[in-house]
Length: 142
Image (tube, rainbow, N blue to C red; front, side):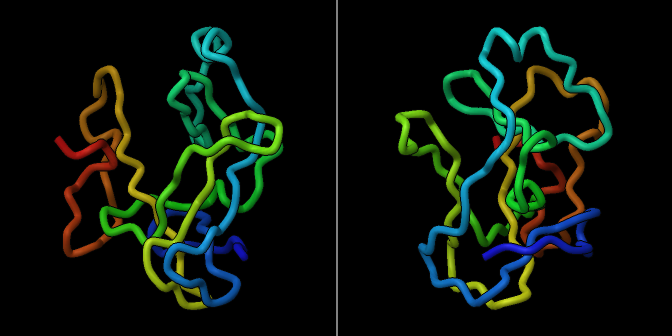
């Protein structure tokens, strides 16, 4: 349902390979899992990050074993949403759904709503989505 390609917003993007209906399940975020303890010891400081945090403090790093869902870029006007669900083995997984009908070829977006301990680098989380409702940041709305 997803194919990756060049994004007009940022680098690589994820695009609908076919028309998607509102509420349709799009895919599962895949990658290497790190426990909360491993997360604390890991250095995530690299140019491109494909890390998705879970509510239990663990993360999925799609740079290792990930699929095309890792290319969903941020937008302040997203057309997709991510939910935590229980997978077949009882593990928490991240599943993406369409927030509205999406046409084939349309880029898929999430609102990252990032939460960071401190924004030590001004503008480090600047948004370039271009949406009319752009809040100028990928950080969670206050």
